[in-house]
Picture (cartoon, rainbow over the protein chains, first blue to last red):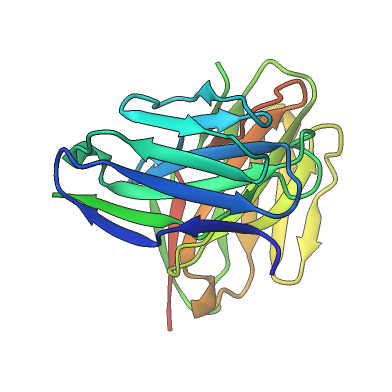
Length: 115
Length: 115
């Protein structure tokens, strides 16, 4: 099915380890986003991209890096994981005109635990 | 500042009761878009509705209805004759027309429907 695919779905990291979360979309969306979801705080934007080769910081960018080398992929990296980064991570994509249609299409999420 | 407030953290009802989820937003923009998303226990985010600021007509979709009142900056969501399957976290979100990057989410309301 067309949509947004996130890998992996679950991961446990030790403090200080690094990892990369992969997001892939097949809808030819220009924009892509990484959010984290924590209890009582809703979804907070980490980084986003408005096109291939571009990235920008969101609300909570510290401790994360991103890359968008191809239009369909958006990678989120944790260079040195910390327990505060334990969260559920959602990737989303949208057309340039975000407010048309359904807004964002979300992936199914990645549950990350840092111990 | 632009902001979405969902003051109800958690609501519990018994099946067949009607329930209203509140959403209040803050903006100085004249044109904007509002969304509701549902996050069932399985974790994915599901689009429910998009509403334009220039269209204050209420909308009904089966047991779901939405009441948009620009005068009070509210976009409330009512479920009639609730069912156990309605149990989920519901997010209200906002984006102004001239914002080319991101949806602003409320913190969500957890709805529990008991049989």
